[in-house]
Image (cartoon, rainbow, N blue to C red; front, side):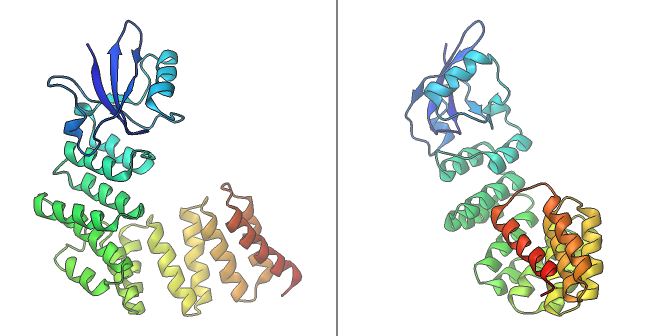
Length: 298
């Protein structure tokens, strides 16, 4: 008996023949537009490979992996795929078959689940497929019992796409206690150059959820823009307390000192940021420039 499945890593149908100790994979090209076309004959399960690093293709690498690990972690049946695992996959897997195929796959399994539809739309938008991302959100708005999350996501897209007026209309009936409401409304107001109103929204967002990084960044940006450097110092001190490993917050705290002409204290924060984990050549180069300016007294 063969078990047919779809590999998210290379986009091929895979037929697995259960043995005493292992499954053996063999790649076969199929139409990847619908999971219904990937499930094989009636009564056979669809096997889905979830986030197993190092797999280049089904035919060779999965064979080798399954020879080594008869039941590798991440090999699960799609009819047992949980929303949590699907969300993890949408965030972490590089879909070589293409994000469109992956989107169709997850929407076929979870056609009415708001958080899955939201994650699919976000992944599509991030991959440059904005038109389909909007289409997925519109589908969700028509078919999901709860739509607040989808309304907020659509409004967020509209703000980034230069249509913040429409975005505000989309969230007009979203309850204010909905997660991300105040952040997204603030972002839309910022796009309209209504910065003072936007700052009030981000301030409320931090009162509701002090761990919302975007609100910390945006409100801090507002303080810098208005040259409120002492307030920015206090703001980013608190941000660094909540996110001690976030290098950017530490740099912004250094900037707040620098613009108050407290270069020695700015230098301390910049060096602290440089020593934190997480290497990024562009970020590190910019940070080194700040350190050099402090040390030169310029």
